[in-house]
Length: 208
Image (cartoon, rainbow, N blue to C red):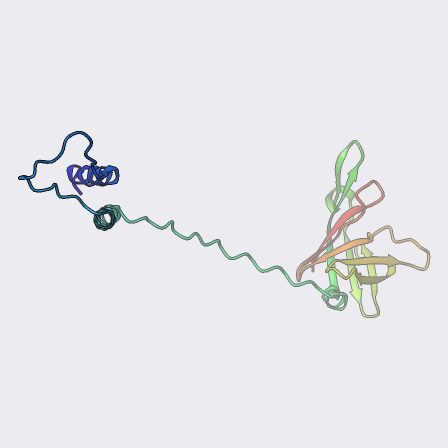
């Protein structure tokens, strides 16, 4: 829409809205001249409505043309997150007991000593090997350098949230070669998370 045409329409509306019929006071129109043509109020309103509609139509066309010339809005690419790894299913106490059956080689025991940090005991530092042979009836034979150092009994319990606990006992209440605590077991290795103080350590075994 041209600026000149726009302002012409606005000016016309303003002029029409301010037009009032002229009244004669001192001067009279000569008899031989035709009377001036005046618009009635109805005609003024009709003309203003017509101009208003034309103005609205021009504005609508200008807006449509402006929208058509705008570049399309680029949509941001959808970022898909990598699928999370499935969690390992929790083992039952019965499953863990079946997995323990057989002979296991002691790898190390790690103690967390106050003021000293971690202390690691292993066959090469202690000077002897240790083997745990789990049998039916929840029994386990402890072998030191392949000599029997005692037979323990054990129980595995489930805390109801997928965490297993193993506890050892013996007739003389001497189970120094094993640790009580949370049990983490796989096909070829298991560890028992002993106490986080001087009273216990984390003991680790691998399958023979």
